[in-house]
Length: 375
Image (cartoon, rainbow, N blue to C red):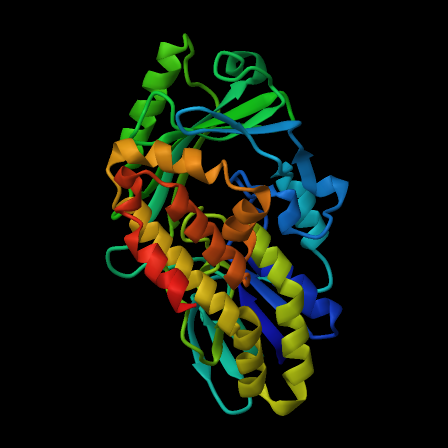
């Protein structure tokens, strides 16, 4: 019997597998395609994580910009992950089984994990890190990107070493994301902030091609398709421990989750190891508590409210809102985007935005003041 069986071979699953193994727990990771490379592009703020090894960083752009209706220079270091380097750093100490989970049966002394090919793995604790499974009509962030040579991207940005976090100029329906990849290429991505349901990728692809054509460019090479469920609720406590996107760790307003998942792997593994002698049910409860303390649940509620307010704005008000957001002090920007348990900082960021906003924006943020007063 394995102590911990984790379904899902992405960054979240492998981060937790590594953390559990380093605490002496016999850990098995189930990955449908263990040899498949991670194809997604992962960007994150350097202050979201403890120091990563240099091998896990593909690019650290010298400048990060954002545009609402005007330019903002962001006082935070943005990083692009080297997927192979991150994976190598997270590998080791645990066994990997190729397969897909078909079902799980929980018993008093452990769990039986059934794979689609008929194999059964015995586990003390079962973790689902296989990604979000949306049910019903949820808010989604969608994007379509193309990878261009850096010299071509100079028609969109002033420097190949500049990351553009979001650029609303020229469109009120979505923004452009521009990210140097560290290998002489740049990802340019047409992004829909949030919609219910998400904007079709075919429409975003057409918008990106039109934007590139207007700049005298043609999309060619690798393409990237993104669909992220944004507004998942805090999961109920049970014997299956969700982790990563499956645990609702996606930021409802930004769509980011990788840094949060990697950062939480150690405290969750600590909680499991400390509760291990009290049995599987206690270990699962300890993991849930480590993932979702009361402060994190409160911040998640505030962020989901922010998402709904933002999606309720008319399209012409959205760039104005982001102009306001990027004029906030860096500490308040950080509180809202990465302060997962920072209730005072998150509430203050929302309150400051309300105070700064013109009426065309403020009327869509009325509920923020009520939430601020209730904390």
